Length: 145
Image (cartoon, rainbow, N blue to C red):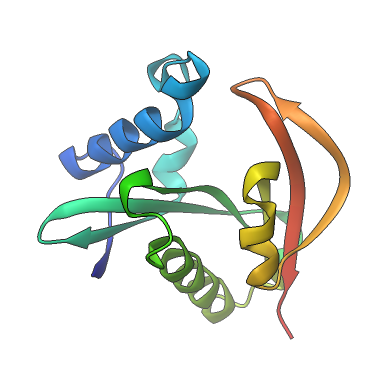
């Protein structure tokens, strides 16, 4: 597996939207095309590839107070549990640390909370639903030492 930076607006970027739509929106009866992704023009977008096939994507953006946020972490369900999400997240964390970030935070689906906890994230606040992803979410963070 190879991790590659993806440029916003390219064909590769459009493939990430298709994957995210199939995995994260269509099962909820939603369409990712109804959302505005312009903020990702300033984000770091990493794709996980095997034989030029997109397996997963991670999107990270700079936040206030020297924190980074993982805005998306999405892996093709057919290959989940093969470590793709873990590798994407660890690479995003590494990049955030190299940039001097204090840590990383994210809004996890409650169904994925245990995955993040295994990787050192802690949940905080109350469970809520996002308008564009109406399933239970929880905020989580990981501080760098």
